[in-house]
Image: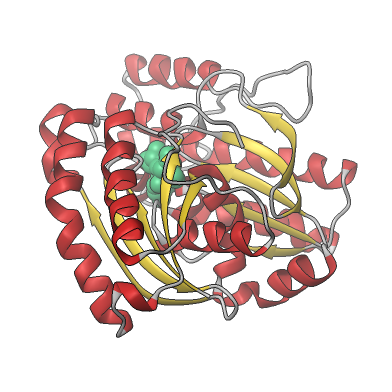
Length: 338
Ligand code: KG4
Ligand code: ZN
């Protein structure tokens, strides 16, 4: 089964064709709208939507060409219908519905978060995970780290997710972005914070770690305030602030993953979402898994940040498992939990 997918939930215009049974990404294109939003230091929904509209036709054409296919050759057309920015979601969704209608193919409505959750199955080193998970239903622990979410999830099977813990305030990517803004870095600041942190001392300052009622929940607002105070004192270099912040987040996430694995022993643990691109965080999580004999899978960088391959794969799997993926009548769902 080959699925063509469109992802337009935020500021990445992404298109991909994935062969579901072989887990092969036949082609993928991502246009990141940095230039469109740079002056505003945040994402402007209307500009995002217009940029999606302008870019989608050429990206779809390039993807099909790259895969050596015509629309008639794919088996379904998928799109992210939520969660995300309403007008941005609507652009990709209408485009995908039109393609599906014209080519007479099923339309698959995909939850963006489910795309991230299943993305490690597409990783080159995710073969063992994918086989165990898809054939024998071996569950895995997912640490989902995006700009909008920070969650620990037990992925039982395609379409079956148990929430173990979540953030009580900011998402982890949001926290990186806010700290980056305080340090005058361009939005989205996660990658810039990581680059700056590479030249700083991670032990320059001890930052507070939240005490929470539920041990698998997260909170980042106290950390954010502490970073603001440290910057205000003015006695540390921006690189030392960035490195200490990143180190604190990595330690905190590693500690949560360790607790989650203790309470839910599984053979596999994965990290997904844009923040999973952070090498310091990946390393900290990998160390936790190695110490427990748990196989750790992190998608390659291009599959961590927003992309359409994960949307194609999630849509294709749901379709194959006979799970409802909506129809042409489905509307966008701006807020939609996994
Ligand atoms: O998953 P994603 O691409 O979009 C959402 O669905 O939210 O995640 C975007 C988030 C942004 O907050 C961005 O700053 C963060 O991921 N991010 C990073 C890195 N790369 C992206 N955070 C820390 N280190 C990185 N290398
Ligand atoms: Zn995302």
